[in-house]
Length: 260
Ligand code: NAD
Image (cartoon, rainbow, N blue to C red; front, side, top):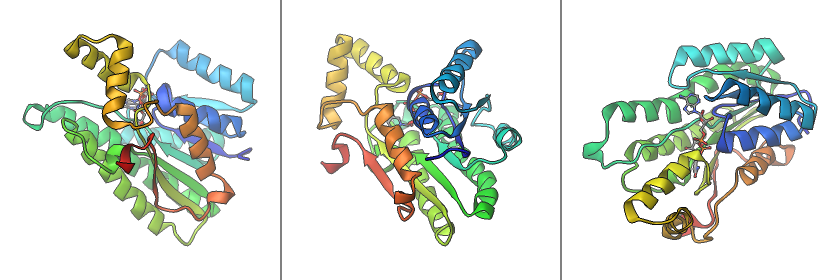
């Protein structure tokens, strides 16, 4: 479906971003990976995608908190593959603390990585998408773009922000073949969430399995984690022709979290 197109996924060396990148590769898109990690492991992720899906891959280690790095990454992708046709803004971090204890530098980092980076990638990707009259921008928000949770002030603010930014991007591209939508996952068992499972296990003296169950039972009625593969399939659908009139939505995939 996406042969000849290029998908750039920020924060794709792990978790949801990697799951999404692999689903785009399965559709034939060339892939630009981004994120932190061991260089050999990142090379292996790319080699696996090239071997499994017969696509081309590239990697740029831009730090999404740095606008100059983001600019360099976007130029790198165009130099390598000619354009960014599908942009997935996924990189994100979390910090959990009450507002009065929340480190100011953590607030700034979360706003920069989880929100402002999407402004920078989008402003740099849009001119060529508009010129080609085709593009897909998918912002990985969260259920926390729709509802709040205590102790996640910066994250909830950034995710509500990106849902708003998604709507404006969709309106500014409404008369074109470029669409922009947000995906709002509930709990997905990635390193970002495993840290919260570990903290709960330590605080409450629970096993890893019981800490996972306790985390899920508080918020996610299905009692199961969403998977990166399911989110990748939704991202692929949003990139299909069938979804060309899906514009500016915040689509939750959350085991019923926001239905409550
Ligand atoms: P993860 O920790 O597994 O992956 C995060 C990725 O972002 C990694 O590749 C990491 O290297 C990269 N990254 C972190 N800081 C970066 C920076 N400064 N510059 C470039 N890359 C950076 O996390 P995940 O759970 O896969 O989260 C991915 C996205 O999904 C985030 O935006 C997160 O908020 C969102 N999300 C996650 C969940 C969940 O339950 N895991 C739920 C809803 C939304």
